[in-house]
Length: 452
Image 1 (cartoon, rainbow, N blue to C red):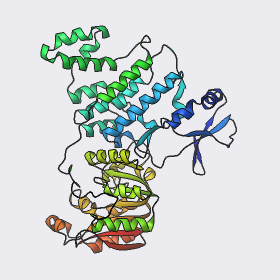
Image 2 (cartoon, rainbow, N blue to C red; image 1 turned 180 degrees about the vertical axis):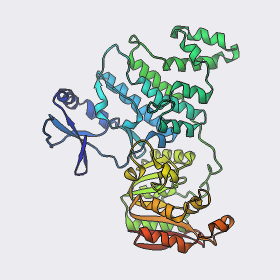
Image 3 (cartoon, rainbow, N blue to C red; image 1 turned 30 degrees about the vertical axis):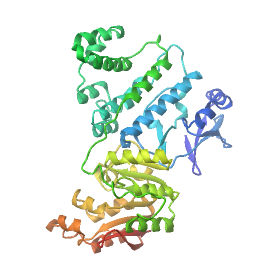
């Protein structure tokens, strides 16, 4: 793999050339690409010494990782991987791995990006990536369904009980309270129903039956069971998982302040100011930090920008994900906190490429955010501004609530004597050449356009 002049390429060695030529000439890849199951790929005109030919892949604007996805995004990615595997099996092919680091989102749609993971299938052998699929999709989704989304993402980020291998069965048991799995594993698969009848009262046997069928699907399977049946079972299992959205005091926010985008009749002053900025600057890409329910992300996407929307509230991220899918908007919604994104802070380190390297955009939106970072997370203006600036290649649109704002007055104390517009402006001018003030919804609030 290599990049050249903004393109992403894969050089194919001589011994692998016949296999990829077969994939390309037989139309297998074209069908998978058309169905958006596999990243767009074509033979390029480039030549590289020591290689038979060079493929060119479509490049996606942003890289995201599974520990940043809401549960519904992880579920969508799981179903996309299973659908891809099922189609590959029809052609005597398979995925040699299944981890979600080979999945990226093109806007709100998941797509498999590692063509090198497609290999010939060995008839009679189990799907080698099955355990990996359980570790990175099935078990985390079950933890999320039990109401522990934050724990599931933490395990995905940090590797669970074994670093780098996803979520293990014992992690699932410890978190969800399922403690009878080992007893069932000691029995032959054929005897599972008998175990269920012995272990549970009659009134609970129906529930136990469903649970044991789920565990049976997670057990190692032999070559006598068709791999495609295992994939079908996995699809049924993933589809049956009902995710519980986290409930917070802010979950119903924007309920009365989310006007449509067809008419501006119900837009506020802030809506109009941000729209004016977007029309004037025409950013090609925008990072909306603290995006809330995502109204401004959707406005930005409808104005032609590729958007990354970040909020720590998974309920809002999930709602935005569904909105983006329904309206086919180029929005990548992620669950993250500003402190995690901020490269100025020590705990920004995480697996994969650093946030500032993969989410940098033409414009950053930071609306109704600064006062929260100051009064709830105790960050100073320099940390906030430098963190926001790290993601903005051209400009930043940031909202500021002054000391006389009704919300801010309730928070001010001696420890926040430095909180005022003049000090915030000073911090902004250390990073940006020009700052222009626009009105917001209330008297002591402004949207500030900061340009390099």
